[in-house]
Amino acid sequence: MKKPLSKSQCVCIVLLWAALCYYVLITVPRIDGPVVLTLAMSAALVFIPVVKSLKKR
Image (cartoon, rainbow, N blue to C red; front, side, top):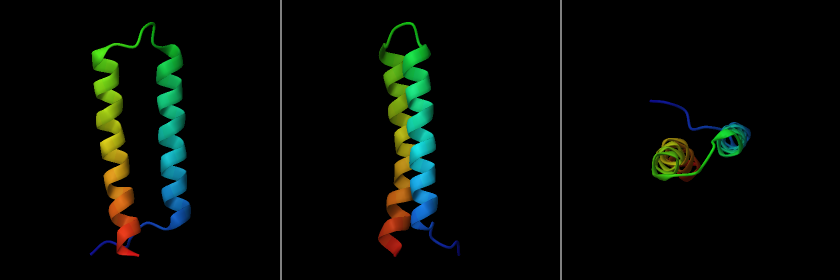
């Protein structure tokens, strides 16, 4: 059984994900479907475990 993430870990993960999204959005020549789909999938991969961890507390 895994321990739930602490609040500081959740904040750190979300901030790192936001920084990565910002970097992708400013470096991509144009924002099209694959970029949006990739960002949406990465958001799901980040926020589902964070929300589950926060609900366990």
